[in-house]
Image (cartoon, rainbow, N blue to C red; front, side, top):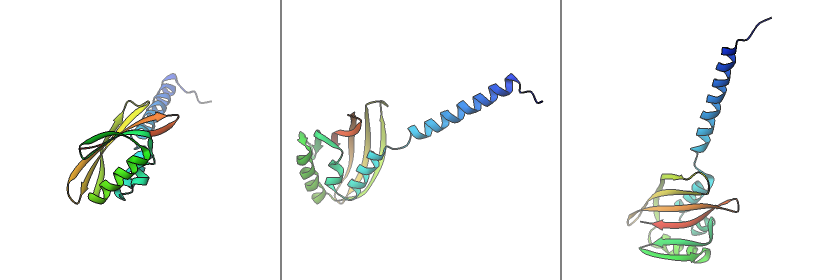
Length: 137
């Protein structure tokens, strides 16, 4: 009969804990689906796809104008923006948050006329990730 020492058990446990830690870190660094869905909407200059994740009202800032807009108003405003500044290229520059109820993503965009950064702030509302702020600089 083979005997397993305490040290062998401790080593196995440490390997298991290390593996779990690595796997959980990999999942925590993945970009949430809503970030990539908004990215796809922006790539296509599709205001309807972008505002799909907006709350009933959102703090919207485009072309130096800050306003609280409804989802419908935001769609019209973004649609007009896309007509004037069609997006050529876009990428996620940064993202983060407190890991609980709020997060953000920064998109870098190049249009036919200018380059911008879009900062989008998200909150978990009733279990869903919702855009509460959309600011372009």
